[in-house]
Structures are given as structure tokens and as C-alpha cells.
Length: 79
Image (cartoon, rainbow, N blue to C red; front, top):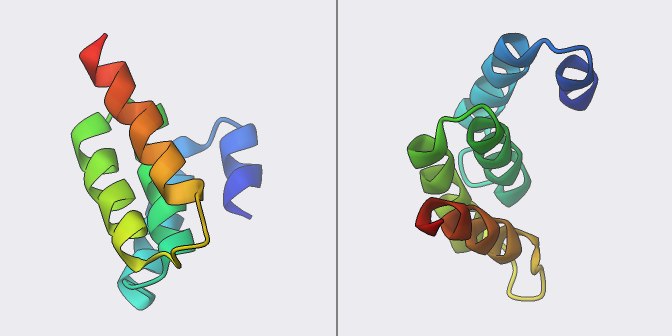
């Protein structure tokens, strides 16, 4: 649903849905990862990085996605 909204250029609605999902499941690495990336893509990088850090914290050690996303967006800050 959220990716559909983003594809339709309805980013504010997508961010609202993701924020609500994080409120419901704050320790979900998938929700934190999705919100973090959506915020970063919306030029809300500082807030996005915070959610990506939460995603890393809550993720299983075998799941590389949160760490990869965090490193990708941290690198963009350094440019």
C-alpha cells in the first residue's frame, strides 16, 4: 500500500501511513526501515537516519538490509 502511494507521488500520505505503522509496531525493523528510507528519500535525512538506526537495532543479525540502508544514507551526508 505504502509503495503504491509513493509510486503515485503521494509521499505525504505514505509517510503518514508509515508513521502510524511505527507507532503500532515500534520495534519492527521492517517498519522502521521503510519509514527511514521514505523520510530520507523525502529529504528528511536526519529523521530518516534515526529510524534506520532503530531498524538496525531491532533487526536480526542475519538481516543485512537495515545496515546497508543506514550506510547508504550516511554516505550521502558525507558527500
